[in-house]
Image (cartoon, rainbow, N blue to C red; front, side, top):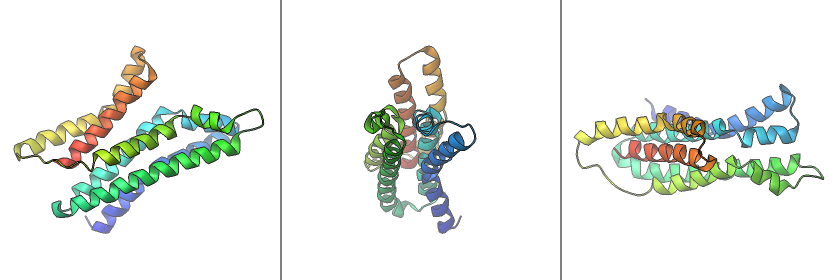
Length: 194
């Protein structure tokens, strides 16, 4: 595939969290008739938004790393780490701005922002993942590459399942989300390292 096409697809996947955030907000206000505050909380407390956003970022990273020569990967990982931090900051700033705009005289904007916790969590995961992908390590054996690819793919694909299963069991929210996020992070790291 052409380098420009790969870059465009990867960059487009990095915009999924923001596009999904704004799209759900517009749908909530325009179609379902929620108030601005209800729409804000609907998006910022939606675990599907978080999981889809993290998956899109991971797929964008993996896709471009896979389509790049090994000699250029180190530079590309640095670029992706910077992108992760930038998209994390954009999402949290958009969320904070929206919280300020939709708050009224009875609502504290900072309290509303903290109540909608997923943009904050998304940004934290982006900073954490950007730090982890820059840790160098290599796979010595060629035989391990296929096994690593399968394991990393499975880790990423079962992350939403892990969230819903732990939620059905009745475990605390932080455990549900933590299990899902760890699967996505470690799956992404393994996928790009083989």
